[in-house]
Amino acid sequence: MTVLLYVLGILVVAVGVVLSIGLHEVGHLVPAKLFGVRVTQYMIGFGRTVLSRRRGETEYGLKLVPLGGYISMVGMFPPAKGGGRGRTASTGFFNTLVQDARDSSQEQIQPGEEHRAFYRLAVWKRVVIMLGGPTMNLLLGILFTGIVLTGFGVYQPTTTVASISKCIVPATQATTVCRSTDQAAPAANSGLQPGDRITAIDGRAVSSWTDVTDVIRTSAGTAITLTVAGTGGERRITVTPASNTVAVTDANGAPVRNAAGTLETRTVGFIGISPTEQLTRQPATAVLPAVWNNTVSVGAVIIHLPQRLVGVAQAAFGSAPRDPNGPISVVGVGRVAGEIASSPEVPVVSKVASLVGILGSLNIALFVFNLIPLLPLDGGHVIGALWEGLRRSIAKLFRRRDPGPVDTAKLMPLTFAVAILLGGMSLLLIYADIVRPVTLF
Picture 1 (cartoon, rainbow, N blue to C red):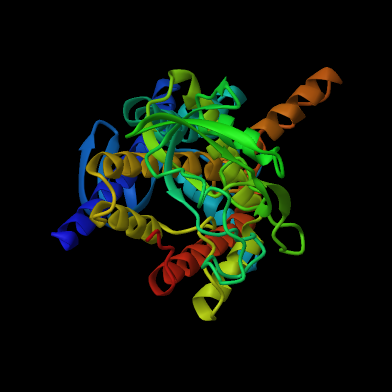
Picture 2: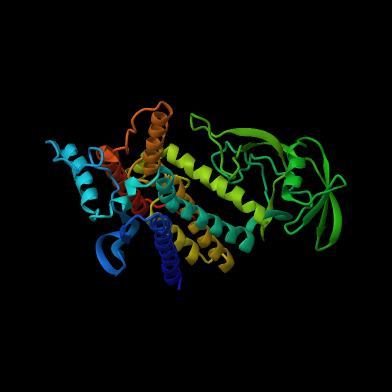
């Protein structure tokens, strides 16, 4: 049964990935057809075609490796000279690469349909087409995040005590196991019991765990009175918080480290209690802020991608630990989904919410990644179109000759290099996710 659930988790995410890719390409396809561009192919995946069907002028199909997709629009690149046919390439690999791209683009244009070439569209139309894919991923990310937050909710701490520490363990201590020399936690002998619900502190009502911790952390050395409701009814307990060194955490609750990699800490009041957590539905107003936070997190990973990949390589080929917050491949995402689906410790509702949340995060990652301003990514095509619009606007302002379309085919060597780097990165992440995967349990 555990194996079947593991496989089911992988299949759910795999289907979600394929659908996300397919809808990403729909985001390109629909505006392209609306603007009159001839689209010859709509394909999900790469490699050999598994099945396809032609409808009108477009072939729709599924390829062997469904880890990407594309639509083929005629006239992606302008000819070398204004409006003319492509010239024969000069010697050299990169020159040939550039000219082949131009020739292939021109050969797709049928006689009498020159106006249907992509490069002939107005700049804003090209931008709309290229942003259609990432926008679709953003909308899917908002949808899945909204389902999780408003439909299932998120686990939030309550004012009910879940467990009580026996001792005080500073964040700088290597082990969390109590030693004979460790100071006893103030709550250990105070009379507090797991299951007690804290309703007030020093006579002031509390409604959240943050209300409780805010008072405790600022009351080191000062006695406080907790009003608690338990199985024996309401009672009052006096406890004096001790000073303890704890880790500084970010908005996501992750420990913060300085530039040298050292854990940042601070001294606060501590009594040694932890809260129970309850699944709480969030209002619709919480969805967009959550999506924004996820987008910022993905952007931070991309900005520090070279450094993160070094860490992945050190983990894959050495003994360094794998960063759970670092980049992972589709294989890694599938393994995480399988772990969640097969874990006996996770309730069924939480499993479903987690899998939907994974799809939401995946679509946000696709949205951000595709906006990177490098060809062959969508962001590269957007930058090319905007640069052309800027050049033409400047020429018009100073009454100069129209400079014509930007010859993005000249960037084919860079595109080739980026494609190699992306392929190498994917292989590294897949290998690391096989030999040193990120694990949750």
